[in-house]
Length: 125
Image (tube, rainbow, N blue to C red; front, top):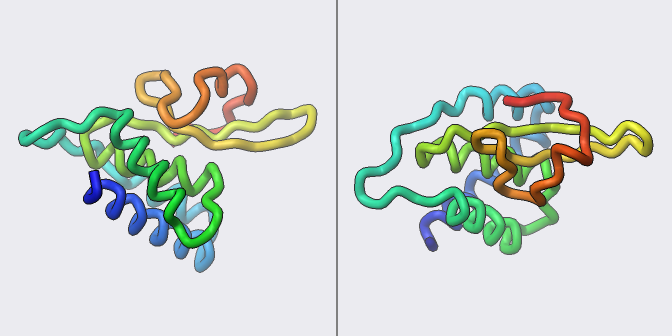
């Protein structure tokens, strides 16, 4: 678990730098480029374990992690460990709020399960 949290911390840092030095398009491109790797032979990681590692990394990160950065990191980690994860970006139109979360096979894995009902999906990658 320590290795997963460290990997998540480094990924959060990388994505933070990417967002500071570039733009949303670069972040989107980075997530889109991450292919789904075959699961490890030693011990496949559960999606819950991987999401928990990213959540812990967010706690230890040097500044506040917002949903887009957290969800992009979660998507990349899941794909690296064999999960076909999708970064989903949605918006609530009445008060115009946006939010990002991760889905695996149409199920929200890193947030509340009713995100799909609260937000209108704008992008999936």
